[in-house]
Amino acid sequence: MPIEGGAQEQVADQPQIVELVGESDVATSNDLREHLEAIAGGTDPRVVVDLCSAEFIDSSTLGVLAVASKRFGAERFAIVCPPGEVRMMFELTALERVVPLYETRAEALAAFPSSPPPGGPGKFEP
Amino acid sequence: VTATRTIGASRAWTLEISADLFALRRVRRFAERIAHALDLDPTAAYQLKIALNEAASNAVVHGCRRSSDRVRMRAVADAEELAVEVVDPGGRFRRGAPAADPLGPGGRGTILLEATTDRVGVELAPGRTTVRFVKRLRSGPSAVA
Image (cartoon, rainbow over all chains, first blue to last red; front, side):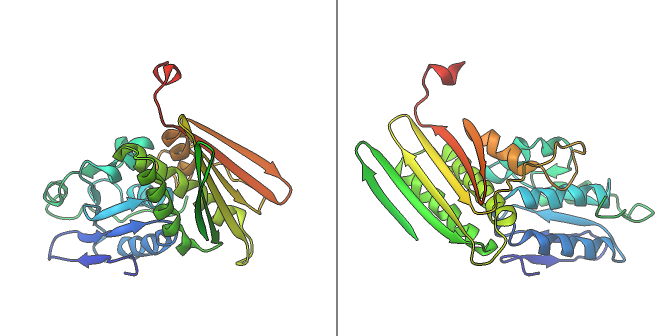
């Protein structure tokens, strides 16, 4: 995906991993949204957004992640973000209380049920 | 365009960018340079980067209509505080809507700007929006209250 150094991996029976590397801002948040929308509309709508290698994220990126959290729903969406500067963005906006945040990718993956929950994600835009 | 100069006991930095989303990374480098020059602690430095990035993003996204529009930033530091101005030609600052939905798409830029600075103000004039914010550099009695 055209997010700086963005990488994507898929292991059988595991959620897709979207990794944000470097800086994410209004120049990249639209690509992130479209990418997450594509996963939500795919055959296995589960995703882990990994921010371990993110150096900076802005309010527009937070907005995309918040909407995605709502759209994917419980047990289909997780964010990996260890304590640090990027995590501070979730704390300052109180998003840490409403999105599923984990400190490691292993913890995030362990939180997914072994098979995807039934039904599909909702709409991205209200 | 970037410049640093000394005015009496204060120091000033300026940066001008085009109405280009990809220019925002230059704003963050500008914030890092100021933080380094002022020897800010890592948290204060990151807060300055967040505040400048959000103010400049708002200016580029909502304050500029043409690609020829410019956003001008000026930061002035004295012994007590750092005062920053971000000026765009739009005259239509968009304050994020109150977050009725905690998982809604917007409204976090203003929250971040207020959370990372000590004072924020917006001046709307025809063809000119100025966002000003201040970060205290020394914790005085007012910081304790």
